[in-house]
Length: 469
Image 1 (tube, helix red, strand yellow):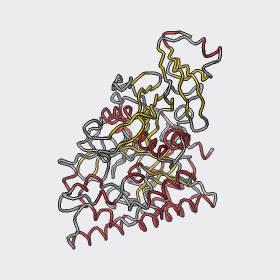
Image 2: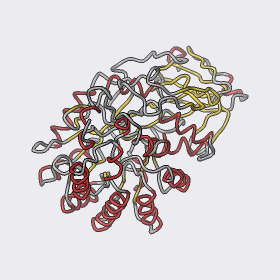
Image 3: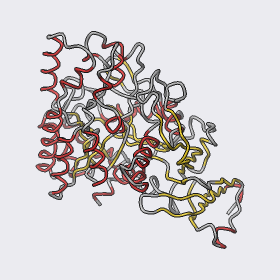
Image 4: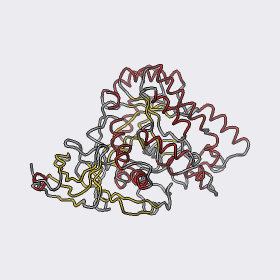
């Protein structure tokens, strides 16, 4: 092995979903070569051009954020992070792989949408990336295309029970897509809200003059999330298809998932940091400030947070992703002044997921290993990236984070790196911070200095869901 192509990370506590051990990590040519106890003759003999001192730090796998929307069209505008800015911000926060959503537009093919997203991302990403496919026009042609996409590494397909006229699919279309997924091994992802019923409530609220941002949460009832979740599970049972429900926000929807999993069904769930740390109190902030927190599914009353943390502990929820879909307050969120239904739906968060979840460790909600499981290993397994991503083991990509568990930081738009003019967590103090980040062995954050570059990140074709093999 060439010393020039090697890096050794020494003296840290290596934390994976499976284990915690003080160990040195040897990296060569972008991969982990060995993990060994520091006091062994084997590790002591390692020589390398770069030595990284991780004493007093955790050495953790790079995060896998399996739900982002970069340069995403919504509500007459586009999410404000590009693939360049969004992946750079992700790196700052210790995330080294994103799975973004390519969009099929109505009247176009899946291939059209996927090619468009490849064009946006290629040569612009600071970290590795992959794609899910949003299927918004279910027909015989797009169903056949699903098979082709699975064969080339796009192995998950998102459908919407919400947003009639935009992304919405009816139950018959959803069933057809699920039947196809059952045959080709693709994982169906579901935005589970009863869109037609919500639209009735939105129309009534606006007609009655209830137009402030807080009403966004009030019309998107928890029962309509739970009902759609129940219906999606029933359709998946009919199709004999696995199901992954995105951005679970409420105890009632979580109960539907738990019931299905208790029955042994291949049903999985994701939640997001905003549902663990924010609430309807934020939506009710005065002077239209609540618009900053409009997302779908919406923020819920604070009491739902305990149920979601419990679901993460009991594995009724397997993954925490961000649903990062930022829109600037000035000029974008403001499109909904006087009518909450016109506020672009989405929050910024890709930079802070790892730190917020570590705060969950500090606060006693989850263990260190569970932190790594829900943020790194489980999303990698769920979406066919494991063990290349999501762990630290010989043969894995050298996506590593040197993490200072005692550093204190205050989250603020003044210091974040996302291309958005506010922070959803403004002024929140958290304990823990990424210090140095490696992506495939290349240092992209060096002791809180960005050393990465656009174009380092590579597209990663994915296998099928490891939980179903």
